[in-house]
Length: 215
Image (cartoon, rainbow, N blue to C red; front, side, top):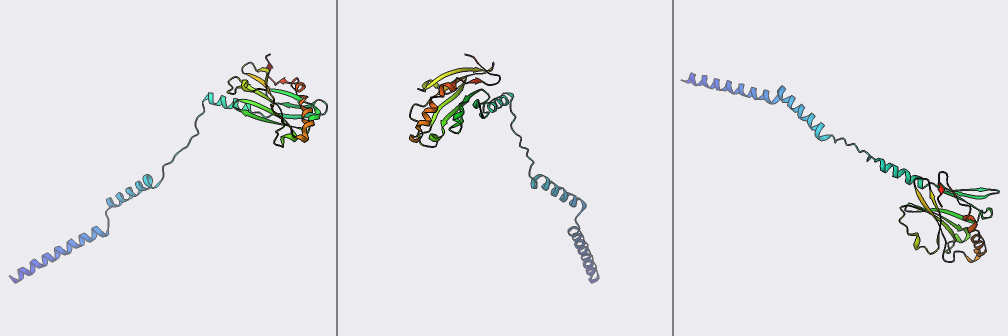
C-alpha cells in the first residue's frame, strides 16, 4: 500500500512538471500566428491613424464670364500718362481720350485719377492751393460707363462734353467744376490765370485709339 501511494505521487509530480513546462513555452515564445497578428495591427495603426490624410487645395475655377469681366476691369484702370513737349505743351492721355495743357502750366498743376465704381475721374488742381485747405480744384473730367451708378444730374456744375464709343461700349464724358473758392490767398493770381484757360483746354480733347466721339 505504501509503495502504491509513492507511485501515484510520482505520477502526479511528473504531470505537474509537464504542465509547467508547457505553460513556460507558451509565455516565453509567442507563436508565429501571434507575431503576424501583431505586425498587421501595428502597420494598420501607422497607416490609418498616425499619418494625417493628404488634402489638396485647388483654386476656384473661373468661368469665362468672370475672366472677361476681370480683363475689362484691368483695362479700365490703365494709368493716365503725362508727357511734356517743348512746343506743343503737356499731353495728358489714357486709353480713352487725351487732351493738352498749356506749356506754362508745367510745374503749376497736379493731376490725379480716381475711380467711382466703373467711372474714371481725372482731376486737375492748381498745385500751390492743392497743398492747403482750399484744395485747388480747377476741373475734373469724368468718363461715365453706360451702367454707371453715379447721378451726374445732381451736380450743379457739370456739363456733358462728348459721347465716346469703340463700337461696342459707350461712355459719356463730363466736365465737373468746383462751386466754391478753391485757391489759397497767396495763389489767387496763378489759380485764376489757369482757370481762364480751361475752355481752350477742353477744346483739345481727342478720342483714344479705337474710340470715336459719337456726337
